[in-house]
Structures are given as C-alpha cells and as structure tokens.
Amino acid sequence: FKHGICTVEILDAKTKDKLCFLDKVEPNATIGEIKSMFHKSHPQWYAARQSIRLDPKGKSLKDEDVLQHLPVGTTATFYFRDLGAQISWVTVFLTEYGGPLLLYLMFYFRAPFIYAPKYDFTTSKHWVVHLACMCHSFHYLKRLLETLFVHRFSHGTMPLRNIFKNCTYYWGFAAWMAYYINHPLYTPPIRYYINHPLYTPPRTIYGEQQVRIALIIFLFCQVGNFSIHIALRNLRPPGSKTRKIPYPTKNPFTWIFLLVSCPNYTYELGSWFGFTLMTQCLPVAFFTAVGFIQMTVWAKGKHRSYLKEFRDYPPLRSPILPFVL
Picture 1 (cartoon, rainbow, N blue to C red):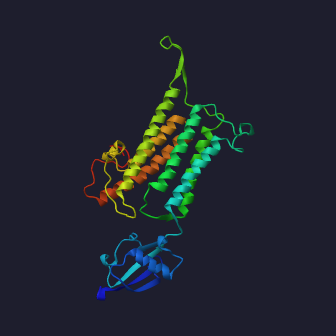
Picture 2 (tube, rainbow, N blue to C red):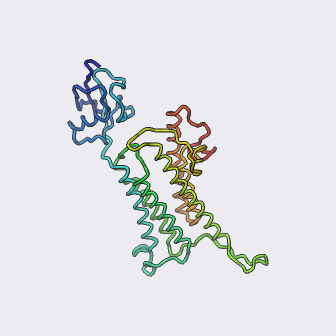
C-alpha cells in the first residue's frame, strides 16, 4: 500500500453503480470499520444489514478481515448487497420459544373458544396430560433461559423475515400438538388389563410403563442437550468469534462428541422422541419427524464446515446419529 494508505470504492453488487468512495483508509482497517464508514454516507444501511464482497456473487467478507490481508491493490473495490432489515438472534429466540410456552398453557387450561363451552377451564382426568404439560413447559423454559444466559452467538443478527417463518413453525406446531393432547377426548397410551394367576391382584401395565420410559428418555436428553450447550459455550470466550473443535469433557453427557459432530441435535431429537412416546400423539410425531429432517440439514452443514476448517477433525464422527447419519 503506497504511503501506508489506500482508497476504497464500494459498488452495488447488482447494478455495479458506485455507491461510496472512501479516501485515505488505513491498511489495517477491518471490514467492520469499512462498514461503519459506509454507514455514515448511507445511514439507511447500518452495518448489520451490509454484505461486503470481493466479487458480486462471492461470499460475504467477515467483519474481522483486515484490508491489507485481502487480495486488493491500492484502490480496493468491494461489492455491496443489502441483507434487508435485521433483528437480533436473542429477540428471535425469545419470541419463537416464548410463544409455544404460552400457547400450550392456553390449551392445557382449556381457555374459552378452544373447545366446547362446557370444557372451559376444566382439567383432564389423565395424568399423562399433566405430565406432558410439565415436560413441554420445562423444555421451552430451558430454551428461554439458555438464550439469555448460555448461548453465545457468532452473528448478532438475522434477517427480520426469519422471525415470521420461525414463529409460524414453532407456534403452529405447539398449538397443533396442544390441541390434541389437551382435548377432552384425548386417549393416553393404551393400558392392558392383566388378569392372570401369576398376577395377584390383577393389574394394568404397558401404558404406564411406556409413559415412564418416555419420561426417562425425555429428561435424560434434556440434561444431555443442556450439557452440550454448556460445552459449546465454554469453547468461545465472551466477545470472540473463534471456532474450535468441540471435545468431550468430564461430563459424561458430552462423551457423545466422540461419535457425533452435533450432539445438541442428537439430544434434541431424543427429547422429542420421548415426548412422542409419552403422548402417543400423531401431531407430536410429525413435529419430531420434521424437526429431525431440519436438524439433519443443519448438522450436515456444520459437519462439512468442521471438516473444511480443521484438518485434524476426528474422522469417526457422524453429523447427528453415530455411524448412521
């Protein structure tokens, strides 16, 4: 860089029109700082909604990328693309998780206009319905608390349009599941009545056993999911965007890292499988299946990025299911 300074021009990625010309930019300036300079001349495009690239169709540069380390000359040409209105990840998570919690409770307490008037504010006679409400509420309370106190986000914002898509998914499924689980005609897992000389007195089994096993699976996976979130949090110091290979810790729930790249998704799937087994409700099973497909896509993407970024990445790991997927 001549005289230790350079100039930067920013063009529209679609039209190639010149949007901004920055003179006397220090070579050690970061893309984040260039975004701030660009924002001063175009206040409508704050830093979070800017995508700055070396090529109109290329990948966005990271905020921490330094100008002098990029393949540019004394006059650096960048291309700008508007990412649209942005919203913080914390706001999105609090909204998409708070909705299912409240919606489910509305159906559980049988608020008016949901079922027939005679059922308003009545309670179910089946104990599994109350257990399901506690499990569902626990799950989303855990998610809300993790959003506030555990998660560290590599990106501060996401497109505003995502909140509508995410809320439709979470809120819609929560209402669908809650409607049937809390319905006055809901039937819990089948109970078989055993009347046999070996059993004195006669007793009912299977239905209760199924619910108890499902509860154990659910709670086990909830603890596992939380343990993985804590392990991932400890990998990234506050304010840092550095990425490291996650490894098992002294916590036994993290030992699954030996075989899986994204065990938080593995445990999440296990939790909803347990909830499906507990309620024996078709909408819950459908939600679990759709969630499994989506989490598999995310897990495969993260697994590929691990393999690309770290040459010494453990070869035995699968994206979400050990040895399978």
